[in-house]
Length: 196
Image 1 (spheres, rainbow, N blue to C red):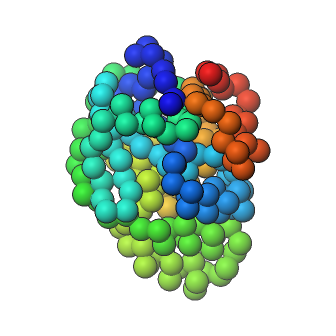
Image 2: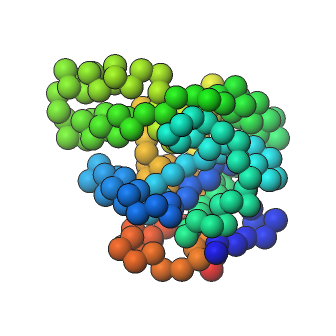
């Protein structure tokens, strides 16, 4: 079980990265590695309050209890400076995205971009995705719409995976136990704080 104290936990507007318990998410960790954003984190979410977060996954966007994250093998919380007004704007904007469509095709788009598969193929993948996104893309869309660049950077929501986010800004990492085959990807970015 992964644990953190109330003081160490996420604040409203913070991004949450998590390692999935589902073995098939290893496919996404591999895709992130191939696309140049190696990371054990295969899911991104957004803290809404001291006990809830916005979770974007297949089936839509929902509000879930933060306590459920303790079942994840590892989590990380963004530690990028945000004002109270920015936090409020992010949370308010996030609530407008409940039931947003999710698409796995965005990973195909990322793969096409990484390996320069040509404008026609990449364009077709982008068109297939439409307004739907993966978890990290929705978070960047929310930040942009709230007028807050994530970690002070302007990123295209179509081109970011959870692995991309894990390499930008400052993070507090919490890991319950070794992650087996994912261990080579567990080294956090230089300058981040790691907690047992």
